[in-house]
Amino acid sequence: MRKKPKLVIIGAGETAEIAHWYLKGHYLSKVVAFSAEREFIEEDVLLGLPVVPFEELEKTHPPSEHDAFVAVSFIGLNRLRTRLYDEAKRKGYNLISYRSSGAFIWENVKIGDNCFIFEDNVIQYHAKIGNNVTLWSGNHIGHRTVIGDNCFISSHVVISGFCEVGESCFFGVNSCVIDGVKIAKDCYIGAGAVVVKDTEEGKVYIGNPARILKDSLL
Image 1 (cartoon, one colour):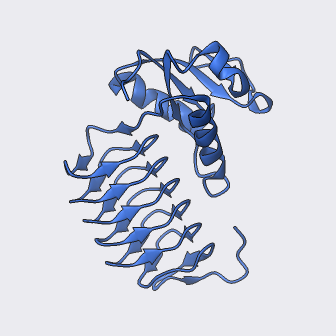
Image 2: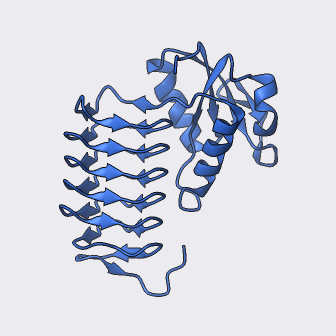
C-alpha cells in the first residue's frame, strides 16, 4: 500500500517516544500526532505534538490521509499492542513498519506490517517476520526461522535457524533458542534462558537448559 504524507503514532508512553525519535529521521512521512485511548491520556501534548483520543482518531486524522504505527511495549504479553493494532486496521489505517538502516536483513526476508526493527538486528536467509513484531536492538534471527504475529524480542536474543515461534511470545534479554525448536504461542522466555526443545503453550521458561517455571500465570 502506498505511503501517505502524514503519520500518527498510536501510543503515548516510552515506546511511543522512542518510535518518534526513529521515525522522524527515517520515515518518508511526517509524524503529526500521537494517539491513545482517552482514559490513558495524561497530557494533551507530547514532544510538541497533539495527543488525540484513539476513539476519535479516524475523524481527526482520517486514514485516507494518514498512515499509523502502533508503538506499545509487551504489556499483558503483547495483548494491548495487538488490540490497538487490530482496531487501527479495522479503522482503515495502513500500518507501516520501521526497519533501522543499521540492521542487516537479507533481501528475501518477509516482514509484516507494524514491525519495529531496531539497529544491529541480523535477520538471515528466507526468515519470515509476522505482523506487529518488535525486534529491539542486537538480535539474531536464523535462516528460515518464522516469527509469528505480535511477538516482542527484547535484546541480544539468538533464535537459530529453522525455528518456529508462535504468536504473542516474549523473549527476555540474552535468551537463546537452538536450531529447529518450536516455541508455542503465548510463551514467556526469561532472560538468559536457553531453549533446547519444543515448548508448551502459555508457559514461562527460565534457566539453562530452559525449564517451565511452576505456578506461573500469564
